[in-house]
Length: 405
Image (cartoon, rainbow, N blue to C red; front, side, top):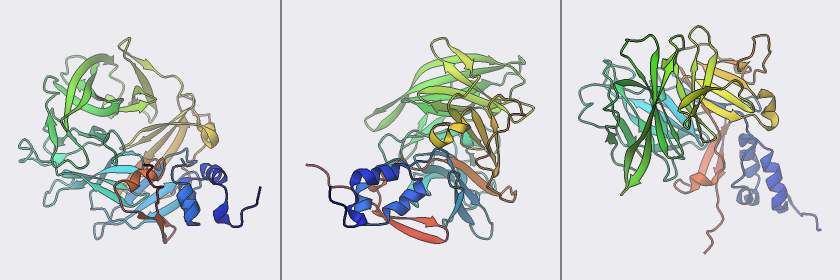
């Protein structure tokens, strides 16, 4: 076998093996070496096992700066992206963050009717239509973090945004709004009209929308928790939410149900929330065949990442295997890691303990996982992106092989 005459002639299989062992930011450097490496390494997953942190420090005089924190190599990157003061993060998937922008000339500082996607890894933005509805014109909207989600990669046809809103005066609306990137308006779904309940959390699993709800009748000390499900049907470019089932469960009053989150994991629907008197949490799996909640005693080879907005259950494999059955909490850029349901004497590694930021209430942060690979963005975006490495912005030209005829 003839030795390669230059680095650009390195065999493709060797390039792929190298890329598979690199973290996302190192893959970016790798692909900037030469055109051959960019061409041959466009669809290889990075070695990242732990979610990154995307954070934004607000300043009222200007819009502040965004930051990315990579726990795998303990590096912080500054992104010179300006976000409006009062912006809020809601959900993240595939390297994208769903952000709400505050309304202008509205005194209620959390009011908003405009959402958009932002990808901090590629500095791309996808705009969504303004949320307009005759039922909400007279009152500003408040979007709770656990009540707005999206179902797929925003660059694909599978992405649907689901939203339940309230307003600044305590009015609760039993309406689910849906929208897809490219739609000119939001669609209203009155599928919750028959439920005299609060909507606590939303999740989308295998084409089904799940709504966690709780009664507020005050008759019983126990909270009556229900899980409503709706089949997502796309018909003639319209989204239909077709009711499937309603499961009811009794929840003891000493658990903080109002802090619950629905999480998808390997096709399962999980319910998780904090205990009332400490920061520990409990996780249940929804058993649809038996119509009951099954408490999980051990996360096995999983890691739970808790945040004010986003909760993620990730696999603890490879270099992250020592973090199996652990819980990691992010609250205003203060991090704490512990073993799930283990005594406090069990010392847990602190993969985010290196992040030291002064406490401030004007920090917004969210867990985010890097894109699976580069090819998804080329379909609808320009071929040149950039990424901040320290104080240097490195351009990345994404090139795809020609389509086979």
